[in-house]
Length: 558
Image 1 (cartoon, rainbow, N blue to C red):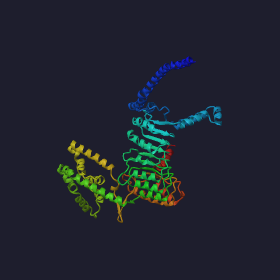
Image 2 (image 1 turned 30 degrees about the vertical axis):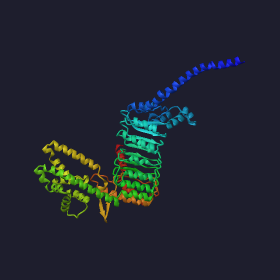
Image 3 (image 1 turned 60 degrees about the horizontal axis):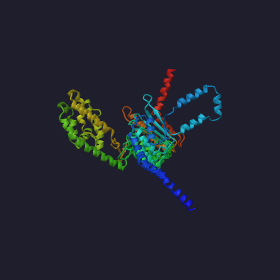
Image 4 (image 1 turned 60 degrees about the vertical axis):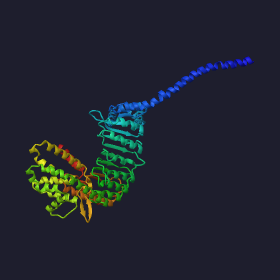
């Protein structure tokens, strides 16, 4: 028994070494594998993965680049890049099907076909739709709709979007953007081509409503659509401040679509405040919101002469003083250039250039004496200098051009440019011509940066009035809650702009609204005030002008 007992014990001990060896061998292999995996597999995967992404050079073909970046990051179920379907071929194919024998059509009309069901699911399947240029097949527009765009996808976009040299627009509809992902997306925009000017982010409500970050001072976006984003008065306030404030102004945005949101009177007032000093926005839609008469009157007020606030008046005076200081600093350089003129040039401009180059105060007094008018502010004196040039001799007409340039740009070096323009071709001096080109370029740059507060103003009863925003051409206020009270404000604004446009018919420059949409509000279309607005706007609307021409062309062709 003991032997039998020892035998099993021995047998149990005998196999144990073997088992331990084998298990030791397995353990060693396992240990070796366990040691190798973290050392040679897992960390390198983590290290090589971004390294591969960085090493990959995008080719400019979005379909190839996006797929390659997804695969290298281990993302297998990624959206496919497809060409955006066109509606016309669909209609053509349906017509062609109707011309075929009808048994199949009759069978499919009774119940949904498998193909139709699949096509519906394919439509909602996450894809990146693109529109291509017809000539070189380069990506022109990108459409993403109905699926959540996460940080990972935006990381891929940061690499494959910059090489798209012809990209013009990005459209994202209901992609689940958050304030964080929007900030990431905004950081990608400066990396993209300068041709990217249009952005549509519809159906993406944000908790913090940070859409105003798209209108930063360094933004190049010209067309922005923010429909269906639940933007309320707070979001409108942020957007209005992005359009313009006392010290900053957006200079690139041309059209802004805020339709189908929750903007009320307070929000409309904030947008109106943004339009006070904005001189770039041409097209604005506030349709399908909650704007009533109070907000409508605020918007109408900006379209006609409005009173500057105390803060705006103080800022205007500061800008005028700053401009005067810059003029005095530039005047010595212009006098040195004036000394190098020929005697005949000096004789032509004796009464003008000498006074312009002495001192700003003397210059103002000289202009006021020649006009015989009372003393005004320095900004208004510059305005009088413009008037003093009109109706003068051809020789003094050059002075008028000089004064106009000074009034709009705040430069005193123009006397240097004026004789150069008249005498440059005769002297044949390359140095003078190059100086002229440089000065013209500088003047052009300064013209683009003129502060609206430096525009000509009107003084009435001790108050300062600005002419109003005449740059906005299209305003859409369909389906709000405006009554005849709000219409009265728009009638006054339209009457003023119509009168102003008649006075400016022979000259260039903005003349105000060309299109004003007020239908579907809380008033009857037979309302006399609305009828008067329509009567005034009809000859201004370019679309209504084009219809009679088309009818005449069709009548003449027949």
